[in-house]
Image (cartoon, rainbow over all chains, first blue to last red; front, side):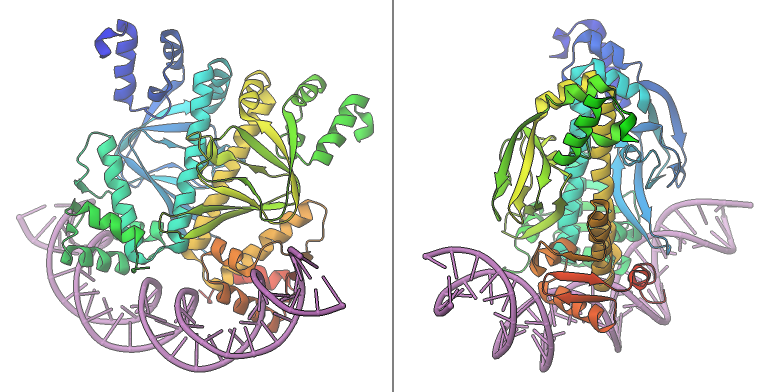
Length: 245
Length: 245
DNA sequence: ACGATGAGTTGACCGCCATCAACGAAAACG
DNA sequence: CGTTTTCGTTGATGGCGGTCAACTCATCGT
């Protein structure tokens, strides 16, 4: 179907999907010339090694980052040193939205593996959003989607038990891998048990134990960071009916 | 200092603060004519009785709501019926941001007392934001601020113990009351113990017990819904040093 | 004003998950 | 390639907060 599009647009779509800027570009349905103008947005790229920070807490905000390759975690820290992972981001997702509010980042973004991002200068994005309606609308949706995502994490942390949290986590990861054209049943975790636990409000031992338990039950296969989902339905069932409730 | 402003602007500032649309209007620093144009935004008003829904989950999104008087809770529900409060909103705060993402609301907004909101049609807001830079910037900040707020709730739910959660909750309420010109040391809770517990990931009995415990310790005075903070510093200390940690 | 209903408190008990600990395995480093 | 360090697993124990229950006290509606 792409063959019906004018060549330059087709080309740009490819460029955009190569750049994996899915969240901002692709779903919008922009006119050809608008798409061309969005190229202005995509400034430099930046490569990061594993464990390297894309930005740190309290650093000045000036750009958003679209993940071109690799994956990240965002972490927030309390004064007493306690740290929590607030999200895991993968290819095509946006980083940096937390900084818009105050002009300073409130989380740190750390690469979980060697990664690459496209730098989107925020001032330019705002300017362009004023001119291109579709871009503005899409950007607002991205912001709102993040609000919604966090609400479902709040629900998870507030009402779910360890097994449910892990099940929800695995299914969410699977769905996101699948959406990117990777296998949704077999994947490699980019994060440690401790990071998973931090995100889910559990200790690493509980994460490990629960994964082992899932394996005994035939729900998944675990081998270190490699996960294979064997029974999605029962996993899903775990979430909706925690205890015959 | 307001006396130095041109009369119409001064007047509008007053109107705006009466309307309590603080989040969108006041901090922006708009030109006089821009402020005038923002009047277009403020459409009808809507009054709600206690326990009445401003909007329900899955209802179509078409407007944001600025709370003019009263207070609300937002709740999200799982398929199995479990419900969680995701936030409490008071005068001057915005409701409805969750709907932008999909065009359907993902939470319900329920009045905690008889309340009144200003209806801000979203299509108009988007259009006007394209023309008024300051409005656009401010709106993005509001969205980002909500993302940041939810992240701190995630931190609370993920790493804090019951006492810390309650302390953080009370201090947050106090600060918001103070920001609105009310007493930050003596106030009346608009929500039940169960709603507080739902928000904090605790059971109502734990909320009740912990409040009683705070009272025994001389940190607060509780009498049903009336709260008086007696020792803010020690309350704050509870959060930062949970267990000599 | 009064009764009915919902809200809050307190106690006793229990279960889930944290904690502490020891071991094993993989991956990162020179 | 071997060494070191980080990561993961599993067991034993304990504590925080959930659960169940009984009772009191506001508050809402008629």
